[in-house]
Amino acid sequence: MKLLIIGGGMYVKGSQFNENGTIIPSIIESIKEKNIDQVGFVTTSNKSADECIKISKKLSRFLKVKINPKTFLKFKSNSKVSYKKAIKEFKPDATIVVTPDHTHYKICKDVILSNSNLLVVKPLSNKAKEVKKLVNLIKNRRKIYQVEFHKRLDEANLTLKKFIFEKKLGDLKYCVIEYSQKKIIPETFFKNWADKSNSFQYLGVHYIDLIYFMTKFKPVRVWAWGQKGYLKKKGINTWDAVQATVEWRSKSKKFFSYIITNWIDPNNSSATSDQKINFVGDKGRFYSDQKNRGIFTVSDQNNFSHLNPYFTNLNLSERYFFDGYGVKNIKNFIKNSKENKNINFNLKTLNSTFYESIISTKVIEAVNKSLKNKSKVIDIK
Ligand SMILES: NC(=O)c1ccc[n+]([C@@H]2O[C@H](COP(=O)([O-])OP(=O)(O)OC[C@H]3O[C@@H](n4cnc5c(N)ncnc54)[C@H](O)[C@@H]3O)[C@@H](O)[C@H]2O)c1
Image (cartoon, rainbow, N blue to C red):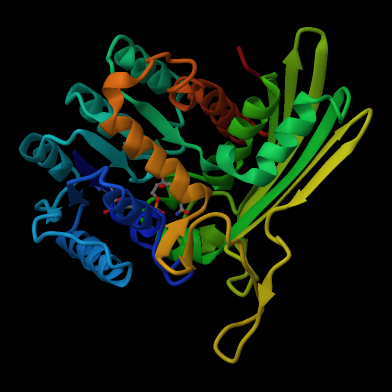
């Protein structure tokens, strides 16, 4: 089982706020479970590909995972198309695409055509036309194709889904979502590509996918508002904050979601992600503060901070291991790819995140269109 990772940034190998990233910890756990034999890294610079290998080896040693010298391979990474050579040489069985949003379409297309299983981080694309083309391309190919919408596996969200399913909220009326991240992310980590994205595309998209996943209502209309200033002054021409109202319908029923996003929170914020969801129906309300999960810490070394031990977490029990809904999602993809002969290839079940991406992408596209057109109301077909 050969796994290729395309991209070597924050989500793969971590940052000052997220020590080990999410992809590398999931790989180490999958090696432990004998679901991977070799891992290849390809990015756009040899430096980041080397760092990926260094961190992978360091974590393997720490977790006492046996690896042979050829477990981690680097492919010559010096251009935006180095990944093509890596695919050709390595012939991966499974590939994870973790590159900036605007590169997903082209890279995913090449991965699909290479006959590899594919997991891509969200959003699959910010253009509905591209998602449709990719969905057409995967039809009749007996492979796993998934978009890494890890919030579908967060127990807090699954509890909300159950409440909605059991009709404990009654008829849904509205939900308010607030999701923001620190300004260092667009300003420093995504400096090269933040102008091709915005806080709604980067953060809000998670909740569009989640609302669809939980309710099965479809988005029909969008209004969006945005504010520019801070990032523009830093030479990054994108919105500091975006708010969107989405109307959702199912037969004669409808509700509204109000999604408020920014990526200019203070770097001293007590968590990288500040997110809250409040769902209201005519029989009840469900409120979840996904930043304050009841754990905070402060020390001589660190400011006051809220911890989320349920996403990607290093557990120091008798045997050290990583787990959490972030890790679980990626491990599932790797395991499914390994076992893909026994899988029921139904686009609407196993590959639902890929197939259903058309919904979240249509909303991103409508929000971007509304922002460009003075907050015009945009209908979604
Ligand atoms: N950071 C997170 O917490 C997070 C979580 C979920 C999803 N994502 C998504 O993951 C993607 C990447 O995010 P990140 O935080 O790792 O970004 P990043 O800017 O830290 O890293 C991007 C990486 O992609 C590589 N890259 C760019 N173009 C490439 C190409 N043509 N071929 C090979 N490599 C290429 C760069 O070399 C870099 O290593 C984005 O789509 C983002 O929305 C990020």
